Length: 253
Image (cartoon, rainbow, N blue to C red):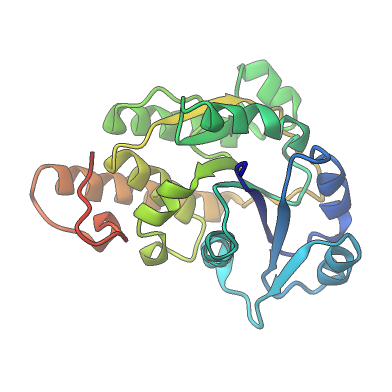
């Protein structure tokens, strides 16, 4: 029996971009698409159902991290071997999904990120605001140093995971806010999973979701906070539930 690939889409008011994102997914390569709607106020749910997606609705807005928790629980419950998270806002080029999945299928990586920053010019020409580019570069540099990685973009919303990662890291203990993304990668590094990335052009336009300056500041501070907890855990200066494996008795590699 072949591997089961499930795409999850954490959605909030994505009606204007959902269909374009869905149509870019490779035909025949995805076993199921699960859209988790975080109490949208537009027609996201109705459109997702017309497209034949599996739809899960939140009765109230649980936040970006809270949405992803539902996404990953659902994918695991439905037997995913590989889980791809793609924002349904058409910011990332979903046609490149098979390339990212190949790194996992070949056993090269356990999680692969779509890097929006192959070069500074491409990122800025794609519409990334200058302040966001600078913040991304700074945070990514610090994360690479602290975690011993060499990634181009720690903050991508296009990610492919093995099932084992999601069965190991305690993602349920993470924030319901945007810093969830950073926490997941720090946890993956702590447990010794192999993290890689591949270039994926990103599009910035009015309908594409993007957090503002204040939210970005909070996200950046939260990212530095989880790095601090990682260092403390590694040095034996404290124990955090964010680094306690979901699998009883597991220890980091």
